[in-house]
Length: 124
Image (cartoon, rainbow, N blue to C red; front, side, top):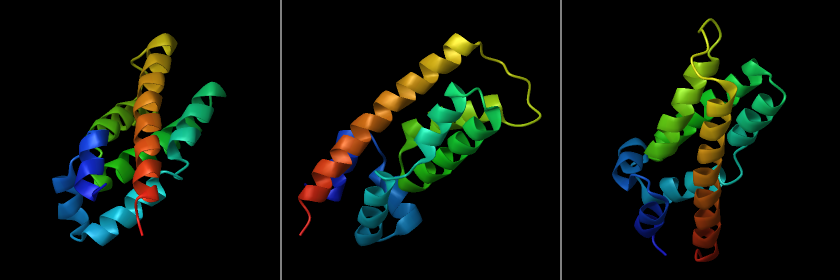
């Protein structure tokens, strides 16, 4: 599997990642590291504990990592959640809607991690 095929499989923007990192070797290195990134877990666990600061920190970190990697759908979803929990902002979504958005983001994240793990197996 090529890096471009991976990006097609996970719905990412290889072109966006290429603009940021310029080299396929760097894109590959950091997309593999993404599979072990704890940002989504911090968001999910923070929300489960109703710790809005932890949820914000996780969502904000995930947004940045995904933006740099060209994972635009995940970045947009994480951004929406970061704004929901941003200190000083008034919450706009009810708890059920927040949970639905986290669950949806989790499904996208899980699919991406699974594909990244498969990609990693194809590397020399």
